[in-house]
Image (cartoon, rainbow, N blue to C red; front, side):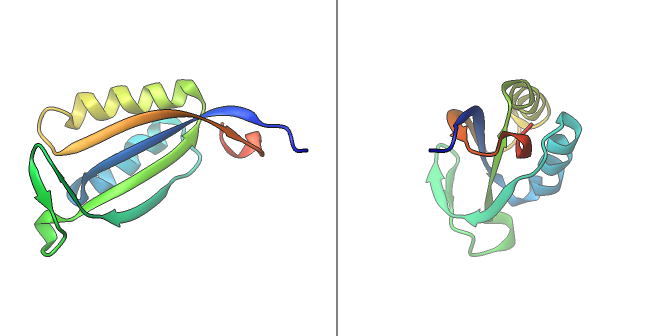
Length: 102
């Protein structure tokens, strides 16, 4: 059986207009990679159906250590939390190849 190593899964859903800016924060914080996809949904700021460019949302997932996750959360919330539609959560996960997710 392969050994499991603890990491954090940071998941961010935000306006597509923030995509490049969020990826910049990830790089600055030391994240080694991410997964990104277009998503649709609804919440406190209304529905985001993606039927026009201004209503597109993206989901960005990052596997990283706790320190990197905290840096990303702090910076995203400082820069964009007050003014943009975004949801951010961090989950405890385990990975098989820890060297890929510093």
